[in-house]
Length: 343
Image 1 (tube, rainbow, N blue to C red):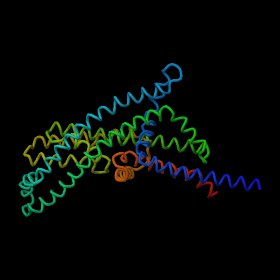
Image 2: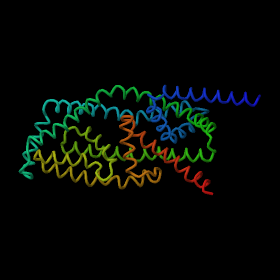
Image 3: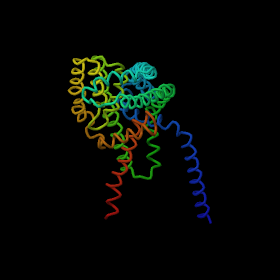
Image 4: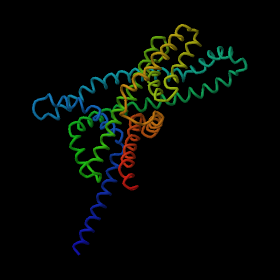
């Protein structure tokens, strides 16, 4: 009788636990991207945080976390904010240009040069196709404007959450390990793989993409292509695409300069993009990424695109992290459980 009562109590407790977990999941779901990004930044900033804590007198987790977050905001967030303002201004200018009939003007100017190579080309067909692209770009830029306020709010939440992840992250991780049904060794292996993946994604692919986008943006500014910050941002995103990469932005930019009869600038930009921007990732990837993330570039690409379509801009980072977490689980299963079942 006593055993039955105990079983009923356990079932009741498990039911309450499951219901509470589902309810809380719905509550926290709108902030999933904020929580994941804050936790990922905490992993990346863990070493600086520990160094600062070590050099502060007495127990100073809160002070070390506050100093780390302050440095993070000054070094990264403030330059990104200025860059975001510049990109927003350029996007607004481009948006107005497209709405005022700029697409038709560009089509007519480019068609004169196109006919030199394709005498049978039709201006009507070219204008129609270019207008479709222009309308798509205008809609995308309009969505950027509407998302600005939400992005600022999310950034504030990320900074606040980052402070607590740095300050209390070890204690929360200890609680998670205690309730995990996995053994201590498997938990440590899982945490290690995820930590390497986080550092690999942030310090690897994202950093290299930012460097390539910045270099191409500088080149666009030097050689006189309009809206260089906006196109540099698009080049950073395009750099994650295997084979083509930043060429998706640099080649149209070179063609723009050719159509504008600026042969010297077009040659200069082509050399800049091919020699400096196009090859720098070959040197940086082995140094920065190394073996911290073992996912193939194509898998990372689909993770980035899928994350962006599912979660928006933050999905660019969360997508590869989610796939890396799945990869860690599969590797633990393959190395531990699969071998045990075969024996």
